[in-house]
Image (cartoon, rainbow, N blue to C red):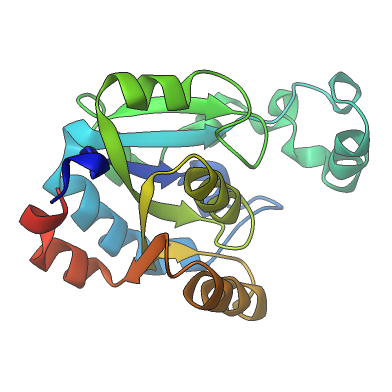
Length: 198
């Protein structure tokens, strides 16, 4: 591997109880792809960062169109969800530590906090992305990673959405528009070539 790509980190996006459980944001696909995500985390738990999407405590704590967003899903504010719903699903939470958390309140993990700076200081230049949703937070993560110059690897069987049509459309866009800066592969292909990638 060229030095320009640096070390590998795995960003596992928002695999939380509120998407796995009986909530307004339940995503049935999560349970189907969870074994693939677990396989990636198990290969390198110390290189894994779990992002967590943290809604506001109340609708009125938000601004602009985010107020309208939570008006649509008032049950998904943290004062009504409870803290357990914000946590990573148990089969993945057992890897923390050495895996780490990064909390965000928007689709993209790059807008707030110091994720990019932390990764750069650790010598990371390659990102493996898994989690959900494919057409929302995963897309925001991938596009931000590409913009920031990371070599980005998307495991297409380790991402999930809540609608087949938009999941498939997002994967098609990743394949067709970002092939120069993004590698799309299966989890098994990643694991089979781990030494070359990492």
